[in-house]
Image (cartoon, rainbow, N blue to C red; front, side):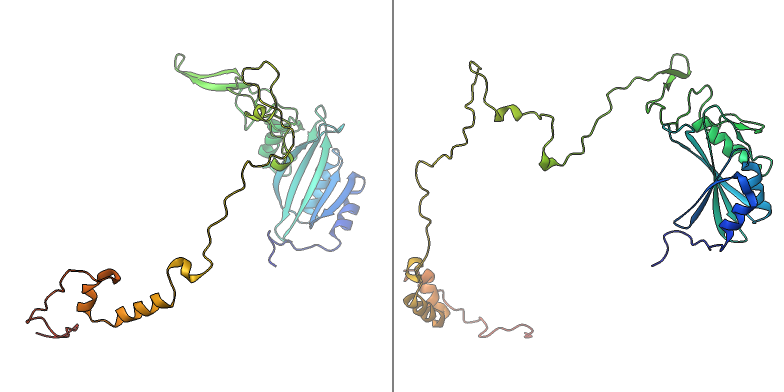
Length: 290
């Protein structure tokens, strides 16, 4: 079976060699579905990334991705994805931090880290010390909060629209035309807890109601009269068929055309048979030439 993703060659002994190279900066190592992840300390991040590039041949910083786990003391994960073009291998470095602690910037090693760190700062609020231009990059000017944090409201804080009177885009508090719908995810045949319109018809009404309905008793109601016996055809005589009818049909099939016209429908009639024209062909066939 072909692989659903590009195959990445394994580097035998790389994990052990890299762990020895970075020493105390290593916190944890995880090898899952062919992906190596090294969790390192914040203070050892820059040196660990430099060792990857200069010693083990990971030339490219492909991506910096954040993740938020509000229940943790250090709620944010910052994941750095590296690619080795020469070894066809990928590796991930991970650091943990909180809202108040900065993460060292990698712009001194990879200039592209400047934009990638700005994305994580904009969406999660993680601060990167040493980034020369740490500004928002995805949200609008004056945006409040960080939209990919788990505690950020799904509706946001403000909404924008174009004001025809002011001839510009204006910000206003969020106004929802309808509430969010909730789904119970119950199977239809298990029954839902809410009531649907019409459910009240299945229950007896209180005495004195305009149209009181009798409450169901559970007793089986017998029909007043049994259903009529079904009409069946058991013998050929019930349908008018049989040997006499078959013999009569055979005799009529042997009669010439003129005789059949005399008793059309199987009965004798007073209608005379049609005369045959003298100039009519005796046995006309397709393809005969004149």
